[in-house]
Length: 426
Image: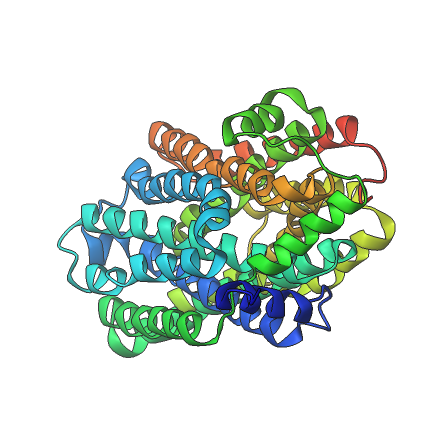
């Protein structure tokens, strides 16, 4: 009996697919481009929006809580979308969810251009959270679909390299755009170019990676490494309340976002208060992003060989030392070195927290467990920005956020040290 045409197409696809970065280098590279564009999209807000909140967007110069509000909103929205993205992609496909992420971002450039007040910036940040939660999750999950299971550290390393190098470059690039065309016009030109490019490339170059994910699952079934089907609620309870390793990794992910929220909200304002101009402040913050991004090319693959725990713990502590040092020092040279130290710490912990979650996740639930981790991780933007905004508002100074973040990072690294076994890349 002749096979239905749709079934024969699926069978032909499944006979052609195979795992491994080299075997799928074309699509893997295209997903790295996607991550780079996603990083540019969030990076464009890292310097210009906080730095010019008063002059361009009508925010009082001592309104620290309102300044932090747009990152609180971003963290909440992105965390929720991270939680849902894995399940959505299992139902509708990775590519479809990726396209949704770019489509929802299309109004952002126009909102930044015409914003009459700070509420418009918060509304644009809601859309940015949707974009980041959907697009970043899908580009990462698709690369994990394509790669071998033994390449998780490498995948997370190059993924975060591409994304956070873009974050750093976008910060300094938008500073130059602002110098040339003004804050609103510069952000508009930059953001519209990036978002339209991401949408068109996703539509016309990306191939759906669910067949590769299915092959991973089939291989796990054949090897006997499979667990019972579970709902998202059951998986969430496991990762949040029951599995101590996942609890340790999720809290570390949440707390490390305090560091990034500090860099995003308060570091531009702090440097401007020290009489640096926008381009000088952008250059220092770009060092943080570029060191973070580039070093992950080493730290991600290294964790596949030596284990993830030491890199995670010392990464948390390096970040803490760098954050605590900034208000105790003075001058562009010292601040640049401290920004580099924080970036190195983030490079050590960031890809390896995600890879470690993958180590503890059954193949058929990997996207969901990573989504749960990403939910808690990006909730750190909201919790951290809320706490820092309230502290700065009550004390009317910029120093308390630095002490809060530094101490939190030290304690969180200690939790990972206690609860996580030495070698977790199994």
